[in-house]
Image (cartoon, rainbow, N blue to C red; front, side):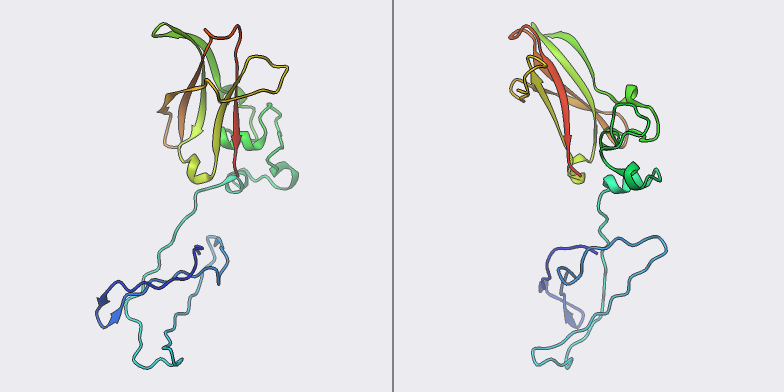
Length: 202
């Protein structure tokens, strides 16, 4: 049941009646139906004088809009509840909390950090030396409300992480759900460089 404010649009005549498009919100709150649940809708037409004279309903179509899976759907798929389902929980532990497991495509019940953690290395490209940083990103991250940000710092003492100088070097498909994203920062301008990935969302 989608939100979006009630509206009526006259799109011309089909058969005997005008085409009217109406959404159910905000009169109805969003609701996710379980596999065994059903929903019943009653549709009625009233004129300005609150009668149904000269009114009618002929062709009715209901469009179902499915939201992208989110963290709650992901964690429920592993049967985790209570404190074990918290985004900050790390059950294995493997150093990745549940939220990062979700963002990077891991299993919160398995020690799989080695396969998920970003990879780095020094490369030379077109006469420039780079610290390269490669991480996994959900291909539908925007729909899920996730943001992935790579930041750089010249030391691990001060909290001065920034996106300044971080270059997006492109992405490649891993599978139907994930992409491999490459970022770089030049090592020619600083004696040392460090990079990290920050993931935010729900």
